[in-house]
Every structure is written in C-alpha cells, then in structure tokens.
Image (cartoon, rainbow, N blue to C red; front, side):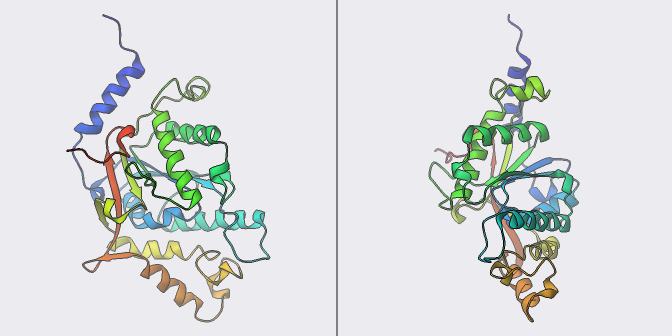
Length: 285
C-alpha cells in the first residue's frame, strides 16, 4: 500500500474535524485563532462586540484589511495619502478599545473603491499567505452569499469573493506553493466561518454583546473622519474639537446602529462549519 502524503493526511483529518467537533456556542469559544478579513478600515466595526467578547475569552484574533480607505471623504482639503494615514490610526485606536493588538493588524494597502480592479492573482496570493501564517480556526468575512451575489458596493463584493477564493486556495499545497517552499508555511484548511453583513434571512447565529456594547460604542467613536461632521470637514482625532453637540450625536448614532433583540444588544452572523467549498451552498433536502 502506498504511503499517504502528509498533506493528504492533514486534509483528511481536518475535513473530519470540520464535521465532527461539537457545536460550542460562540460565547464559550476559548483558545481559538480567529482571522477577520475586511475591505475597509471600519468594516470590522459591526463585529466589535463579538470580537471584544472573543478576546476577553482568551482567543487569539488577527485582522487583515484589504484597502486603506483613502477615498471615502467629502472633505476637499484631505489628500489620499493623508486620509490613508488617518484611517489607519482610527482603526488601530478602535481595535485597541476592544482589546486587540496592533501587531495582529495587517493592511494590504489597496486603493479604496478600486479593489475590484486590483490584480486578483496578487490579492488572493497575499490573503493565502496570511491564512497560512495565522492558521485560523475561524475566519470572519463579508458573507459571499448562497449561490447569488449579495454585494453591490464594489469593494465589499470584491473582498467577499477574494476571501472565499483565498480560503479555498490556502488548503491546497500545490497552490501558491512559494509560501510552503520559501516561507516554510503549511497548507491550511479553515474549518469554521462567521460571515457578517449579507441578507438578514441568511443569519443563523445571534451573539449577546450586552457586556461589551460600551466597548463597541467607544471603538466606533474613533472613526471621526467617517461617522461625524469630519466626513465633510475633518478637524482631527479629538472629538472635543468638533462643533457643540457633536460628541453626544456621534455616541448616540453609533449606539442606535446596534441591533437590539428583546432588550438585548446583539450582533448576528451566518455561521458555517465545513469545508470551504460548501460555504456558498444552501443546505439541500
């Protein structure tokens, strides 16, 4: 009998684990490695309550953002370079509010609004590298949908599909094998997913974030270039430098955006467990 290639054996074992592990509620996850991939420096915000909880439960969390967010402003006095620096610092300040580490944050540097026109092979290769480097037990991303297009905002659409393609590629050792040969990384099969955004009817998991809602709100107040009058006239990172009443309005707007179910603040996701090829398929009868 021929010996089993170690990559084949790893694939078989991981595939088995995808389906055999017990379904532990998200609020009980501990000791997992979680990778969130997003398009812009703020796309992670809708998951900040869950991320704060996961961090508090001693999970290791990494974040890879594809674009610098260097276009989204109506302020005519900000350059793309300056806005890129502002958005990076806003996101670093935001993730620190929920306990995440700056050294676990990666921005791939693509231009805001043009991700769909970036070199697809290059972008997927970069994502494959970080998937193999961080070896996530759970991957969080925009929901690519069930056999249909969910996103019409181009960067969100591109991020969803680039991530899906990268996850599929990362498990095969003969794809992007430079990672394996040159960087001594292993092929990695992601066994579990939390998809944010997408259609409300597709969400199957609700996370109670009552204990972490204040952290989510405080994190949101860091995005002043987007979620305040700074969108039109950026006055810096200190909210007290903005017009009278601005601080109260920003806090209220951010809190009002959070979903409430039966008086409890929640975040909702589509949870999927299984091989990557099944992430976009509806369950069959």
